[in-house]
Structure formats: C-alpha cells, structure tokens
Length: 397
Image (cartoon, rainbow, N blue to C red; front, side, top):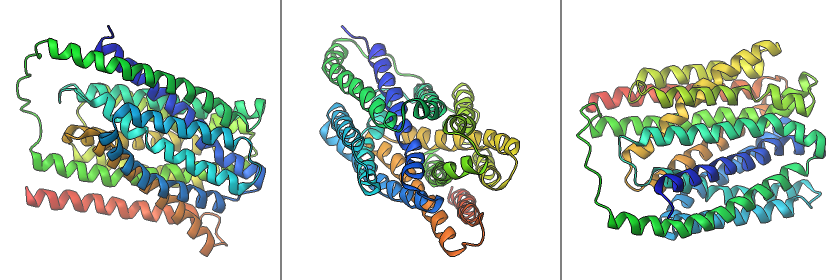
C-alpha cells in the first residue's frame, strides 16, 4: 500500500523533473536562436512574446481540462506532447521549424503546471496549504536554478542538441511515474474511505475576512504577470547581455542564474515565516524592488552591479510569485482551475513584457536601453494599479 505521504513525495519528484526539463529547454532556446540563426534581442523578445501569448490561453484551458479529464490523464497528455516535440525539434534546421516546435512544447507544458499545483494542494487543510506550497515552490525553484546554472556547460560540452534530448529523456521518466501514480491514487482513495476523518482543526482567528482575501488574490494576480514581464524580458535578452560582457555560454549560465538562487532563498524564508500573509506592505515593497532591480540588471554597465541587482530581483519575484500561488490555493475550492488562472496570468506577463521590449527597440532604435526602459515603464503602471486596488478594496471593506 502506498501512503499519502509517499504519493505526495512522488508528485514533488515529478514537479522537480518537470521544472528542470522545461527550463533547460526554454531558457536556452534564446541562446540557440542567437547562435544558430543570428536572432537579435528584438527577435528573441518577439519570440518570447509569442510563447507567452500561447501560454496565457493554453494554461487557462489546461487548468479547466485537468478538472474535467483528470489530473493524471492531463499530465500524461502534456508529457507526451513535449517528448514528441523535442525529438522532432532536435532534427529541425530552420528557425521557423524551431519556433513551431517551441510553441508545441509550450502547449504541452501548459497542461502540466496547473495540474501539478492542484495535485500537491488537493486534500490539504487550510492550515497545511502554506507548508505544502512552500515545499512545492522550493522544489521547482531549486531545479529551475540548477538547470539554468548547468545548462550553459551542457551546451558547451554536447552542443545545442542537449536542450532537446536531455529534457526528452527526463520527461519519459515523468511519463512512467505518472502511470504509476495514477494506479496508486485509486488505492489511496479506497484506503481513505475506510479510515475515519481526522478531527477538524479549530477555527483560525487570524485568517482574513473573505473580502480581504479576495482583494489580496486580485492584487497577487495583478502583480505576478508583471513579475513575469520582467523575468521573460530578462531571459530573452540574456544572450545580448552575455555578448556585451564577452561571456561564454557556460559562464553566462553561471552569472545570469544568480537571481534564480536568490528566488530560491526567498522561497525558503517565506515558507518558514508566515508574517507576509495578507500584509500589503510586503507585496508593495517587492514590487518596488522588482522595478529598480530590473532596470539595474539591463542598464548598469558594471558586472558586479548586475550581480548585486540580481539578488534583489530574485527576492522580489520570489515574494510576488509565492503570493499569487498561495492566495490562489488558499481562496479556491476548484484548485486546478485557479491553478490554471495563476499560470495564465504568468503567460500574460510573459507575452506583454517581451512585446513591449521588442516594440520599444523597433521605434527607438537609437537607444540601446529603450527596450529596458519601455518595460520598466510598463512595470511602473502595474505598481500604480496595485496601489489603486489596495485603496479601493479598503474603502469597500
């Protein structure tokens, strides 16, 4: 008999493998397009905007599909789509072919993240949701940072084929594990019916009112796409940053992944400390740091300053992302659908940021920093909207 604890552990293993494989591919896709097809920052930003637009719609539908089709059927479908797209993509030699393959991988990925978020949250009490989501965030952030850190070395050693074949092999393991979990999920449900339910926890007098909880959910859903506006813009132009400082792909992977480790550290802190729950000042401070650190990374010419700015950038996006996922799961009863919305707003940010950056470079070609400043202006609009929601929600409460 498989215990619920081991079942959740296996879900976390799938999550970590999913993060490693998809990040190794998508974060270094822009390096591939730059090295093999001569893509400029503007072209990579346009590609990132396209991927983000598809993700926004497909993730929303992926969460709804998981609710109807079942979690494990949806996972297997997503894994299968990605494996096929990677194996085909490894054989393609044109930029158009690589873009189409990336879009198909993206669609498959959209079926996995809302489903995994629902799987790890399903059946947990309100008191246990922060602990479970903390583990979830730490695992994907750690494997994200690890994939980014070693990806450049893998490419230098094995070529760009590594970003196709390694994820495909990892994903095949996830596919097999999903079959195993689906079988044991039925065993766990049958065992749960034969055991008396655990005593209900006493009411949490520190929980916010429903109106306040929904207001924070709206603010987090607003802030998170803006965090991903910054993240996806940054990732798309990293090949240009590496070229500016004459960094090899291996060194670029190490230097440009510092913010990932800073985000991981923030997840650990936020997991162990609940004082940020439903506290507007923490969300506001993280948004302000997001804007400042983003501009510093892309504009400041000193490499040491860029490394320092990444620490603040990672900490800021850590709290913003954690807020969106925590409030989505804390308020929701239909977790896969809210997980889909959480991922869809990420896709919206992934689209808007690179799109604004690309347009800024198109219409202000004389300024090398126009893309960064254009996105920074968009982030500032998000900051104003965040404050407006807080003021308006206080008046209504």
